[in-house]
Image (cartoon, rainbow, N blue to C red; front, side, top):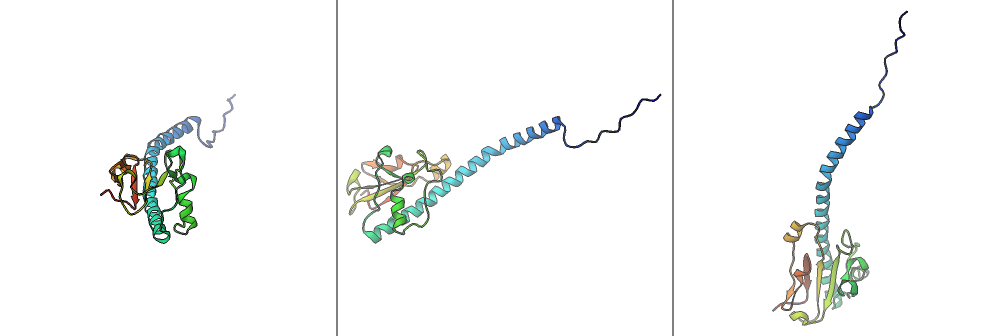
Length: 176
């Protein structure tokens, strides 16, 4: 008597070993791509910060020409009495006055990554000019290369604001 034969087994789907190998390969590829993507996103956010600085500075200057004063800065004691972008203040005033249409703020707007703004009285820190002056800065860039290439400048005889920011600018005062 002949032994019964089994019909050939149909193969539907993947075996467990094939799935483990496939998942492992995908994980290795994702691990290799993720740091590159993270660096690219950080550079993109840094570029957005610089674009925001140009937009904000232009709005501040137009506000000054129109109103004869700098936008008010809401002093925040947690940040050395600087007005910071993630608590409203100067940006909201520029928007209400119609000098900025977009809601501008650091892409991360956190305790570490934010914009700072402050108005100083005439003569503060040896800065000369015809009245008060303002300082505007990016607290931190995410990439050192971007910070090195875009430091900006604002200093008076008694204070180098560039040492306090990754990027700084301002208006209404001269060092001489």
